[in-house]
Amino acid sequence: VQLQASGGGLVQPGGSVKLSCTDSGRTFTNRGVAWFRQAPGKEREFVAAIRWSDNNLRYADSVKGRFTISRDRAKNTAYLQMNNLAPADTAVYYCAATTHSWNVQYYNVHSYANWGQGTEVTVSS
Figure 1 (tube, rainbow, N blue to C red):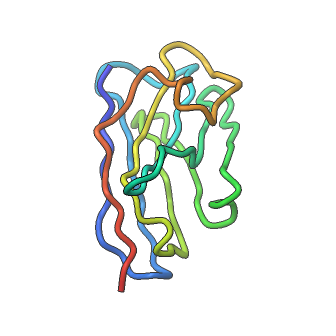
Figure 2 (cartoon, one colour; figure 1 turned 135 degrees about the horizontal axis):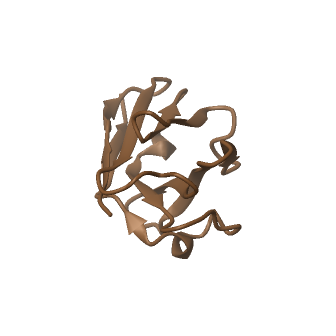
């Protein structure tokens, strides 16, 4: 299982960026896919998750209304559209996927066995 995350960069406050995550080894079918982030000196925290089978979506309170997780089944790719970004959103963003099925503790880093390499998002003027 090899997850690849991409799309990070430098963005101004109030701006937008879209991250992508794909698994080159197998499909996301029946799995859970999530985005976490880790700011310097802080623990990795949950951002958003999607249950691939039925497009059930979950968000951290801090990003609700600003971030949108989505999928393209044909491309086997998950996305994180991030709008109205603030300096507090600066972090390395990681995509993660379960191995076989959705985990009810979708917000827990330990629920995901497969991780991408991380892509950095810096929000600064």
